[in-house]
Image (cartoon, rainbow, N blue to C red):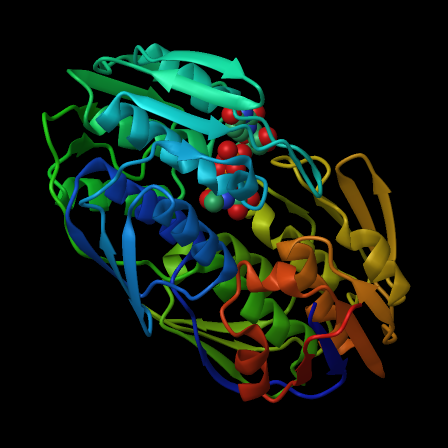
Length: 423
Ligand code: UD1
């Protein structure tokens, strides 16, 4: 297992480019199940989660060629309709194969995901949605077994806006008979990106990017090529890195991003005292002289993303005053809090509300990363801390950030990956 060694206190400045969005790729790749043939998914990030999705789809008969960030997918020979526990337990997004498999082949056997590092994450909405489309679904030995002759369009109202369930139903409904309406659909850009690929494949979809999506099922879809949208969470993470570690007067430019996708984060950064220049596909940030405390409550898109909550708490650990950070999407997503406290942060956690009393300094220590965004938070804190921080178990960060240490090094950070030891 690798670890990062960070010597804190270095200034950050320069330009860094954002990679393709992990959460978009994880939806686009299984969409290729819906029509046999060859697809080109440009700007696909080389991440552990993408590799996990590749190996799951390979086990079904799909072939891949990955050259730089261009992923060629050949889904002509799908012979196996199962997502085994070994894959799903590594990555919940494996559930995305359920909708396309049952819709195209009338059968799917997909392991239930179980818990994750920060609590139970149910899939009831995926199951209820597919049942509404007419699938017969049984739970057998930890597996969802779904069968259908032909799915039929239906009106589906989600109690909770779910990214994954919206994606699954979108894919399934594209090949269903008749019209489907999804109410309280997820509006996240990654779901819009999936819908746009489906349209290129011949699907009839209205209301893309809104909370009411209408799909008129078609008899067959065909392959298409697409360029993956930039990763808004990576962009936000890099901006927060610049705000926490950059010295006043310096400038960091985040390139090849879509600032419209992370307006909630740039707006909070301005509240915290950073000076931002926002272009069409870039953001420049000059760090605040003094970080102001700013409360944040996570919400579905276009609110402040839960995937940026941990990084925000790191920033607020060094604010001049007290801030309150509430996660309304995932109530127990706070495994970074005790680790940040090992670096000297002053945080009180009560249920899903973290109260952060900003400190003058953080001090380097050994910390353990427990999930993807928690790792990002610890790295940001390490960049700003005095002395040396070791972030152990960085395989979590490799799930969702492409070459994070190289990008940070390019900005001037002193961060090094140490490989191959047991930590
Ligand atoms: C996706 C993202 C993840 C992000 C999350 C919220 C991917 C691959 N992952 O995860 O990075 O943190 O959106 O923005 O895109 N829920 C249910 N029942 C369900 C499904 C979800 O109760 O069947 C609840 C969840 O517990 C959670 C909320 O709905 O409280 C939102 O979860 P959801 O949007 O489904 O998250 P994911 O798609 O798993």
